Image (cartoon, rainbow, N blue to C red; front, top):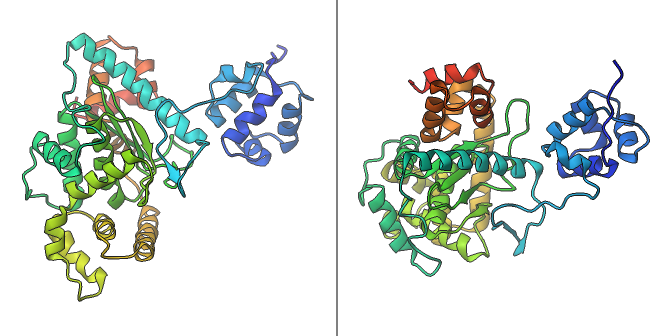
Length: 379
């Protein structure tokens, strides 16, 4: 049988490759072809089969149909871009960032339909405050909604983080956490973004970049929760010196929520090496030393240089530990995908109300893996 060739726009192959930050050689290796094939396809000098074109779309994270457009697509982020670099907005999002937002929006759309069928009410905390609200007022309301006392018994900071995720989800706010787009894909760039929030009255969503160090994710979680409270969607880079009002306020909320300023200042010893303060403060607040260092920076107890040097050291230690092993596929999925979402989708799939292939696509796994994932969740 003769090969069926795809009449695609050659310019769009180059656009897709550059969008994914791939050289001709890098894309060639992903497609298992010679580099000359890529150059020839992009120049329109060599025909390409539908199978090859589909593989290009898959490897560059673009919709297959985009390759057939007459003009190179102009993509825009579907939610506000609040990332800044030296005071200027970052213009070009990576293919990975665009893809993960697409995945999360697809899950949100399904869950909104599900909630509508269940007759669920809207989440009352979405947009309850505004940009003109004070950080302390927002923190007070958030802790009240999450039923967190002024001096909570937190356990370890890992336990505290797990508990916070459960409390946030109990309010109807979904929490998603991914570090990559799946097996054999590169990690999501922490330098590009640390998280984002998608505000919606029926189904608000928080996303945390799991490629970040665990100690930094807690701050991102509360930062994005603050976005829900002020009703402002956005992508955040987690910078310590933001220029957007939304980011300044959400940083202040996260800092005050996790480490109340008055309490922190009373316990900080200015007459000792600043890092010697961290172990006892970690035991007291049950948050990571990364969060404590960030709080010390916001209160001008340490310099930006000291903060950067310390957090870079934490990143190196985390990367060394990560190389030693990882949890099972199903445990990883459980930590990545909102448990409230997963339970609802799997229950619908097992009942036959949702096709197994649709459920597996939303969960990012093969259809036969859905049943094992259900076992992991205890369904």
